[in-house]
Image 1 (cartoon, rainbow, N blue to C red):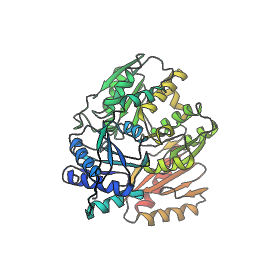
Image 2 (image 1 turned 120 degrees about the vertical axis):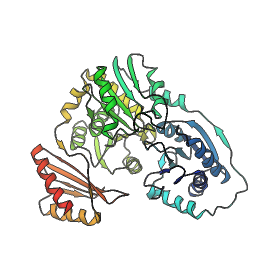
Image 3 (image 1 turned 45 degrees about the vertical axis):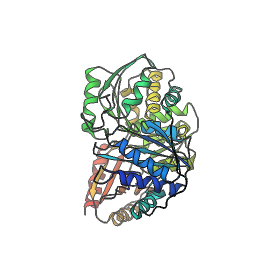
Amino acid sequence: MSIFKAYDIRGIYPTELNENTAYNVGRAFIIFTGAKEVCVGQDARKTSPKLFDALTKGITDQGANVIDIGLCSTPLFYFATKNYASGIMVTASHNPAEYNGFKLCNGGTHPISGETGIKDIEKMVITNNFKDVVSKGSISKHDYLNEFIDFCLKHKGEIKSMKIVIDTANGMGGYVFPRIFEKLPQLEIIPLFSEIDMSFPNHEANPLKPENMVDLQKAVIENKADLGIAIDGDSDRAMFVDENGDAISSDFVTALLGLELLKEKPNAAMGYDVRSSKIVKEIWAENGAKPFVTRVGHALIKEMMRTENSFFAGELSGHYYFQEMGYTENTILATLIMLNLISKENKTLSEIVKPLKKYFQSGEINFEVEDKMAKMKELEELYKNKGALNTHWLDGITVEFEDWWFNVRPSNTEPLLRLNLESNTKELQDEMFEELKKIIES
């Protein structure tokens, strides 16, 4: 399988991704973008310094300058990259320790995806036919950590005394979050796995998997904490746990963060992905927002946010995007907004979330399907004849009825269709799930 993915470059070191590949990626990146300078950061994986050195040699050999921002989280990288023509982050996000990779940006924080350049870069790397340039670039250093912390703290608001458990999973969250919390002495912080060790000795740094949330949930209950926060490996995703130890679905978090941000910018355009509960759209519209639905995937969402001039967007995977961050993720901002919300409401998080639990969701279920497009077209025809109110193909197929809806979208890399379904009653959800299951598996 190619290391050149839909949204980034990622593979196992050194069998799939090594220094030679990194060097060629650096040269190809400059040829593709035409950039004269590149902001480059890295996470704390053992292989990151080696890949950084090879990547930046490729960039400078191709005639561009490197601004080395050093060790950083992905949001810190995005914050720095806003100042430059392009950027590359050496990271494999939440993947296990043997992986590494690159996130690519052009024109500031515009992500380069499979649709907007990764495949072009891949062709150049494979061809490996680079011409030497006369004038090579240089490397200079700039530490953006303090500037980033100051930027985030502008949003600290009026946060009350609370007890918080935060699990940074030995990842880059342990690099940035302590700097924020030391400025908020009213918070009692209980850190879990805060030592940076990207061999991930305690659990995988992927909070989307329930097994990786168990330690956090247990610690919230044992310490009678007000809130639990789980951060992924490169710190661009956050999941939240209420005072009862229950994980809060990220579409509900999206809804809540959006409501709080509407106080700052009334009537703002705000995005939610196609898998999200319809309560997000409903509650935002009731409060004056201009909601719009997005595709799944950070590169696609960021592009749609630019098109819609969107102030904020959230994704079911725990990504939260902010216009002032150059349409990129910032888990610290999401955390501060959540803490302000809880403080103002003077309620527990479970009490705040309860009104959002109006509908019944299936969660995402995968089905093995060889001809994915044929199956989706079959679903379109079947449910058009059943009186669907609305059907769209923004990301896979979404079919909406008055009292239920579903989305079926294809995996980019596997013969899978992913189903999300929501209804007004549990009985209807069960009935429609069984119906769709039979159709998809037939």
